[in-house]
Image (tube, rainbow, N blue to C red; front, side, top):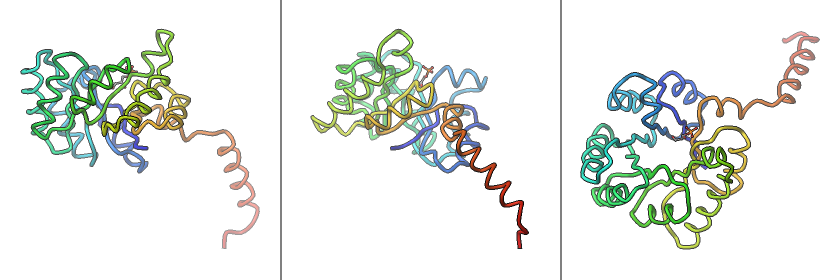
Length: 215
Ligand code: G3P
């Protein structure tokens, strides 16, 4: 399973990359806006910190505009993956970008048929938003499970990227149902490591080690 960081914040990306567990990055317009900087500038800076797929989202809502923006984003660096919304125009743009050799991440997926259409359009990644489904009383992880099973059954090469992950249990379940990728906020990545028995065990080992000379 691959782990991406869901962030446009350079410092936290660099901090998590230092852990040695980050395979790629996802951003969205909200995360980019929080930096106060233009999208190309942020994406270029991220390519210098992470050597892996980096998703950058188009803003246009028509196919031609999405393709134009997607080509410009892809020209920033070979690691850039163009994030396209799951709309009719987005599906056409995904097909055109795929045929131009540009990788895509089809985002804002909320049901199985959407995911199958994205795969048919040639998406490299599909991003179902788990947390936002849970927010309205659905079972986000159930959707991930359905998509993983359907892609497997029909042999679609599109990778299932579990997005909108909010906490550790989401990560546990994403692993269990076989999501190919999980994109996690820095806060969640750092929380995954924490366990009270690890802290207690380390405390005892250090206390015992202090009872004898070190050399
Ligand atoms: O990048 C998409 C996604 O991870 C958004 O998460 O928490 O805003 O639903 P959230």
